[in-house]
Image (cartoon, rainbow over all chains, first blue to last red; front, side, top):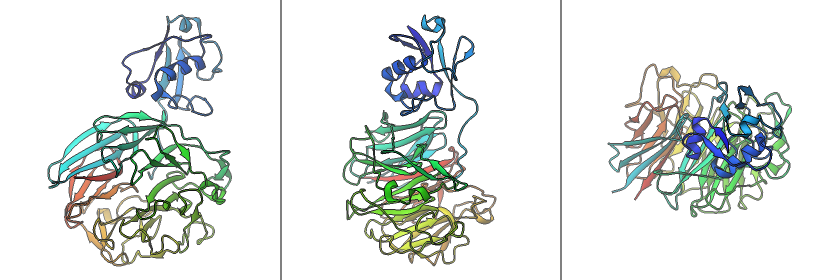
Length: 104
Length: 371
């Protein structure tokens, strides 16, 4: 089982407490993890990656095994420790960001 | 006795304020969707317990929430807003073409007759509709297909479709407004649209009387006279007596005609409210005095309403979706500020008091009068 850690606001949105355990079929990649995650928790669709382009949202980052994997290909194999479930796949909201809108 | 429910969207969540018809004691419920920007929450006129909320953040994008019990519980529904066909380009701030990109939902307007039908005004500007309770969305692409789309451009807050008004006398007629493109109307249920900006004069665009390009901030209508519209433009308060075919300025004696909100009394179609803001560079009330202005003559003659509102050192803003009225016999007028206050006047503007005063910055206020 793959372990995924979500930021607090997405856990609240999806009504998840603690880590997520996912059964991922086939190669363990960012794409296969996110496909399984969104299938298990539909409210997360569109909040981590764009609905249409499937690209990671700009202020979302992916980490695992003390590495920033955000800029890796979504189809690149993730570290073996993630695939084996001994290390979590971390989905993190960047500290930078927020709205600059002045006139909502 | 009637009850009142006030739906408040803020920078960090939504709040539901409830009272009986006396409007003296209020219960504050929230924050819902804590930490997220809630641009708008609105209830269905056909089923007041059906609410729709637009929840968004720069980190995690757009979420749409739906309640079927008046805001006690919520469920996420579809958040997939995909432009119809090839989105094309609009004008960027520097005048260059810029691709249309979905950013957020500014306004949700439930149908007057069907709780499962709801319209969404989005940024970058487009109008979407759901007929299945927000489980799926389809663009009414005739609006962007009007032909003027490549000349639309963003206002300071983005290129947002922020106003949706459904004509109670004609289900095929809808009015919308976009910053900064202007106002548009459909008379065939959203298939085709025409700009309704004749009479607007905007000095900040290359051609001040252009067909499109005007920064309309808000439009209001009284349901008994759907052909009469009132508009708060970036600068100028305007009025149309022919469903937007021609506008005339009714700023009259206002201390400044810049502002965001405009609304109409529930029972007096010629009584209009605005909150003058000093300028587009200084988004706060003139002289640090928070004053609602009321016209009982449909514009031009305005009186300041100050009792109970701060008259010194007040530098909040009142954003475009942050004013609403109830329909009790003595019409209540409500507005929220970027300082987190929600003010109520239970007597049509004569006297004001805060319902709540320390919320996050208020983005929107809607009121439901419940029987």
